Length: 154
Image (cartoon, rainbow, N blue to C red):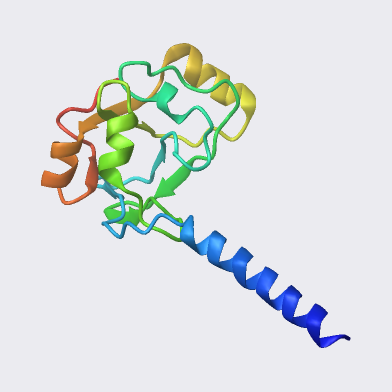
């Protein structure tokens, strides 16, 4: 291969790599933890800012659930799990500032909805617990959302 072409390709790849890494969110805060304070597994879902195109629609005050069953995760009894599960920790101040009322909503289910039909029943009956937190409450609780919470609503 011609050296000039090889140098051009190398420079082109270097520029692409630089551009990719310069777009990464450089904020390194704390991850969101979900803590299950019960003797039974609990399941949760929240509209994720990376994966859910309309993530602001599912946070307080607009707390309608998506029509299609989302990715619901489990928390074992008496345990806490890292709920972010992404390669970078989000900029929580920015995320909370994008939410309509400045409150982050997380939805808890006592049973895993295995089918779309079960999900439709949950949506129809709003058979869940929802916790809404402000940024200050989130920070004060060290980025942990507890289930159950005194503020859990059915």
